[in-house]
Each structure stands twice: as C-alpha cells, then as structure tokens.
Image (cartoon, rainbow, N blue to C red):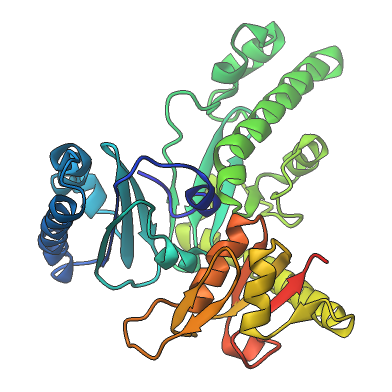
Length: 378
C-alpha cells in the first residue's frame, strides 16, 4: 500500500500493461459511516469486472481484480482510510492512494490509468515527514494539519546505529552504548573515545540521510522536518544532501512530544514553507508576464503545454472548466456537459508529465481570474 505522498509524476510517465483499472470512492475515518465503505467498494469492483468483460474480453479479469478483492478482507486497510481513496491496478498489481480530500465514486477501465483525482495531492494540505533523530536510532512520521502517525520502516531500514553500521561500529561506541541503555542520546566521554563515537554518529547520519531521501523524500517530494536535540541538528545538517530537508526544525527529541505538539510544530514549519513557495511562484509569474513569457489564457497555455514550454502552472482550487485538450496540438474543445472532463485538471497532468511544477492555490491567492496561470520556460 502506498503512502498518500506517493510520487504522482511516475503515474504519468511510467508504462503500464493495459487494461488499467482505476477506482475512486469516498471513505470515512470513523463509524458508523465507515462500515459502509467495503460494501460500496465491492459494488465498484463488480462494475470494473463488467467493464473489463465488455471492453477487454480477452483479458484475465480475475487476475487483474484479485488484489482489489483481497483488500475487501484487509482490516488494516479499512482501519486506516482517510477521506477518499484511489486504487490503480493492472497485471495483477494494485497501487493504493489514501486521499485527504473527498472524491466521487468513479470506475474507469482503459489503456491508461485515470489519475486526475490524484491532483488533490498538490493541494496545500500541509503534508510533511518528521525524522525523529537520536544518536543511536531513528523514527519517521508522516502527517498533515490534522493527524500524524509513525511509519513502519520495515526490516531493511537503518532504524538503529547497530543495524546500520554492524561490524563497522567501533568498540568504544559498543562499550558506551552497553553502559548507557535508554540514554544513548547523551553519551559522556572524552578525548579519543569521544572522537570515535562522533565518527560512528556521522557515519550513521549519512546512512540515514541517504536512505530517507531514496525511500521517502525523493519519491514523494514531501518536506522533511528534523526533530532532534539541538546538538544533533548541526551535525545532521552538515552532512545532509536532502534538498527537501526544511531549514527550520523541531528542537526536541520526538519521544518527548505528544502527537498534538508534533502536529502544531510541524504544521507551523510547513505552512511557512508553503507560503514562501506560493509567494515565489506568484512573483515569478508577474515577472514573466511582464516580459511576455507567461499567460492566463487557457488556450495559449494549452498550446505551450503541448510544446513542453510550461515551467510552472498555478491552478485555482475547486475551479473546473469542462472540455478536453488535444495533447499533440494543445487545441482546446470546451463543453458545457455536466460530466465533461476538466480542462484545468488535464493541463495539470500534462505539465507534470513534461517535468513542470504545479501549485493549487485558493481563489484569493490566485494572481488571475481565469483559474489558471502559466509561466513559460521560453
């Protein structure tokens, strides 16, 4: 099962074996409404099976839908649902995307995944990771403005310095550690003995930094907040190569914080980061517009997207424009039909697919009235 911070870009660039099944539906965080979610999901699976038989009669529908059906009996999945979920499956595998915004019930069977509802991950929900760092062990949390939970890092994670360094761990550290169980964050040593312990800690911090980046920060693009005692902040930041590590951190051992305290401290840091990011994007749009290198016109932006020229796209949260875009030419065909696809959502997908950046802003933060603003590369 994927985290809600799963890399959205890979869905638009990777190749998947058709037919691809996309299922979205609203879920609930508490009972009694939560009890109806599996029943609704079962009905959507039946719809997907019907569509597979009609559109892809030669496909093995049972194999494709088997992992969807397995989730019906997965108590762990149903106990951790949020406000919505997206499930994308092909060739007997399924990717699960818990969502913190409500989605409608949708089933689509096609040659490609339907990913537009996942655009909600670009909403300013305040998502973050918190790395709880001690001298001899780590914990990782994920959260937003409302919730935070510890991530199960799995057996291959460098959860402790002993597991990470193994035979490379100095005898000095082993001796100090064995005499200071439960207080490993505050070793007392001097001279050469302390130097050896410092070397072990720096080695460990490098391993942790690389592992967190490869397995969480890079795939998700989520801000990483360091929670540690003050003396560990400078050491870790000196060696960190993670561009998503926030310059501000939590100056406390994470084990000393309640969930409410961690949410409050982390949200303040992330909100500051998000505001700065939005202000910079809006400012850059203004500069580019003055040079004729940006636009608020949907048709012009669509043509630029087709040419791979859009560097940053600003979208208004909740705004929809019915219609479709010809991906080859950028031509826009508008539609007044209630169930028509969303042009703005398609623009966002195309920009992500061409390695551009997308920000979704509330209406009062948008620099334009059309619901979309594009800054061009050239």
